[in-house]
Amino acid sequence: MPAVEARHLTKIYRTYHKEAGLWGAVKGLVHRKYDETRAANDVSFSIEEGEFVGFLGPNGAGKTTVLKMLSGLLNPSGGEARVLGHVPWAREDALKRQFSLLLGQKNALWWDLPARESLELNRAIYGIDRRAFEQVVHGLSELLEVTDKLDVMVRELSLGERMKMELIAALLHAPKVLFLDEPTIGLDVGSAKKVREFLQQYNRDHHIVTMLTSHYMADIEALCPRVIIIDHGRIMFDGPLGTIVDRFSTHKMILFTFEAAAAREFSMFGEVTEQTPQTVLLKVPRAQVAETCRAVLARERVSDITVQELPIEEVIRRMFLESQAEG
Image (cartoon, rainbow, N blue to C red; front, top):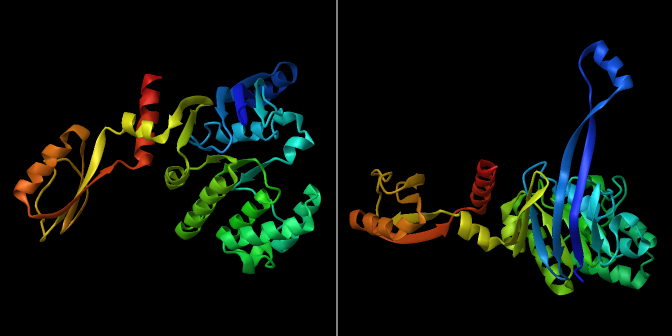
């Protein structure tokens, strides 16, 4: 049995559509019109134990709605789901003790208390043995390098430090499933990298299911061998991240480094995306990479060539554009 499974999961929101003016208000008392929004529309997928899966999509695509249904915070309008064999919205204690949901834009810790006291409250709620609690807090705080911040008021912590404390709280009871919604949002580059490294190591060491939503492609590339892409509530893609690159990356980036300054025009070789006196970055069709390299080498004294794939952000954007065009 998969650790997480959704079958035809659907969530429909109904909003009252009021006509303008006094007469519209009066009509609304007798007969109301509603608009329907399908935040999740026939969503189906399954995740096995130990998988680290990226859940991608633009704002309003339905990512957080699906995570909230899988966590039992929302009841679906249709379909079914199982998390570790349990129906999430039945809110059984047996399931609550085995999963965690971390929302990057929501605080789970008490703002005016030291982080340690909020963790102590979680220990009491989950009935965690004192010795096991101390071991987990000590181990996770060392890994995340926040041991010296445990007795600092949460409101006085930086955003990165606070997110690390939220991670400790989410993992305190050793969940088997971890849902992460934008865990690195707003973090500086260093803090985001540290959080990514921690999540990767924790998933590898504990073999838990981890489902991650993020707008930062660096998170997805570093952590998620598999991605599920959703748009307008529907699953568009479910598979290896590399498959998306192979299908939608029609161009490559070539970085030329010259032995001396080369200020000449390079647009005849491809799209110039960046240029300095001694370097030029060209975007060229995949089939023309070798030809472009030969042409530039014949004209310039080149000291180094680097061929790269397009940034994953652009590949995903092309995917959405193609989907919209087909629609």
